[in-house]
Length: 44
Image (tube, rainbow, N blue to C red; front, side, top):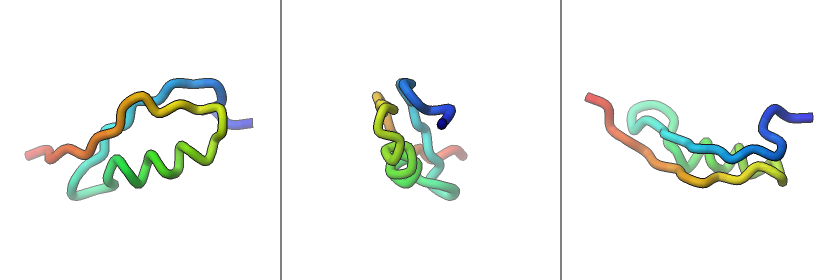
């Protein structure tokens, strides 16, 4: 059982850290999780 099962997920990644698309790929391994927004931002 995962904490992401049957959840909608918003992902904000960091350009100098972990990009949003990398996090999205991990979240999509949970079949019932739905990514509704994924972005990579630059925080200065």
